[in-house]
Length: 162
Image (cartoon, rainbow, N blue to C red):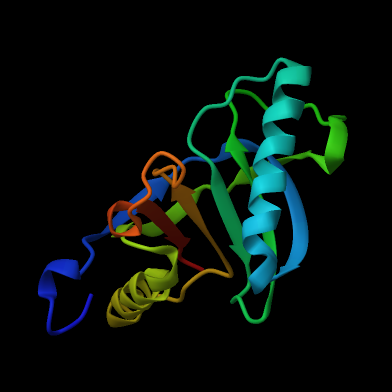
């Protein structure tokens, strides 16, 4: 997403979201510790969902509450087909992705360039006179273990309007 490479400009769409139940692990994590947290969170949620006989209903995601700084309030997990009953091992709890108006954009590339796509979404909201919400989330559509080239990774960013 640069002026020298306009092909990288994300396609940003307005969408109306339905509430989605989730199973998550939520912590306050240093930015440099996110990779370790995600590995632990996704493993814990998959295990808890299996123990509770809850069907996963989408790709892994991470929801960020507030603007990330050196430390971030984050919950990571999976959408689930029915509300998660809780009680799983490892601190996994029920959560939800909220309903309402949001903007979404497909980010293609390494995670380090995600701020460029967030910036484009924020600019579009501001151009339309809208205020970004306090929480945003990312669906990780590529598995880095299966796709070693970060240039091909796909991350769907969802940013609700306040």
